[in-house]
Amino acid sequence: MKPLSRPDRDDVLIAGAGLLGGLVLWAVGLHTQGGRPLGGAWVLLPLAGTAGLELLRRTAPQTALVLGTFLLVLDQFTLGSLATVVMFTDLVYAAVVYGSPSAARRIPVSTGLITVGVTIGFYAWLHRPEALLIGVITAIISFAPATTGALVRNHREAAESARLRAGQTALLAEMDRSQAVVAERARMARELHDMVANHLSAIAIHSTAALSLDDPATTRQALSVIRENSVDGLAEMRRLIGLLRDTSGRDEPTAAPTLAGLDALLAQARTNGADSGLDFTLDDRRAEDGPLPAPVELAAYRIVQESLTNALKHAAPGTVEVALAHADGLLTVRVTSPYGDRPGPRAPGSGAGLIGMRERTELLDGTFAAGPESAGDGTKIWQVRAQLPAHNEELTT
Image (cartoon, rainbow, N blue to C red):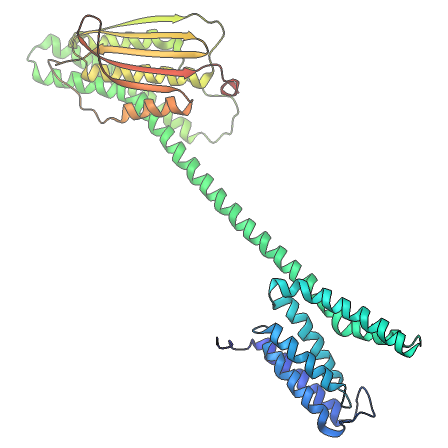
């Protein structure tokens, strides 16, 4: 048998106050009834027993109520104590508040039926209106504390449910905040990589060429390309830092790259890749009218930009082809470059560019593929292909 836990301090105070009050009433000779078979000090027996049961009002409320009912019946055979009756009402209240959920539902109904039964029974027995007072007293002793306990318990359960919901809401909000931070960090990483990697790759390639070739003209040309890319890269970095530090709260959107700037992007790639034997062409076959959603244009521009950067770092001498097509609600971006051994300096790669392009495509529910393939003439090419949905109305908002 599981041992009972230690009584609560408030229960000890309630038991002590009830017992002391009952002793004071007995000492001054104040009783609730007279002419009972058990007179004298017999009234102290149910009083002491009920006070003892008050110690169990939280730890064993249903047991305390059952035993308290027997003691209340015993009290009716003595001179009676008001303290015993008051403590019994507290046991009824505690059984509803601290008892099991089934007991909390059952006790108010049971006490209500008992009240009605007692009222009807005594009225049928006595045939006097005063018999209704017995029903009122029964309701005050049993039904009233039971309904009060039910109200208190419902209020506590509602407050606990509200507290749990608030905790869950706070947890979900924290999860949303963490996910938003992670998503924003990933977006910033993609933007930083796509904006600067192109310039830094060109700087790495031409600086390596300048150090490895003992030709003043080639060195001077390489240094010119390095300076141009350094200035452009610094401008891009300053623009990004300005966006991150902007706290003005302005609502107007910041200008983002669009596909209209591909000509300038390819022109810069031609300059950077001339020494590596690379040429760049653009085949724009977008037939459908109307502007593309801004997120689609930005993603397509960045995919082309990163593909050109990878071509500058890894492609064999030859022509890098950029092709665009817009049909059936899809914008198709395809970049092919020669695949094979490359003479001269080669810039290192980390794979972050492919990850960024794939993430950009998946964020728009598109498809992405990149890898080596065989061309029609049997040569090897590296192809990047992305299909971006361009008909989603939500993207334009």
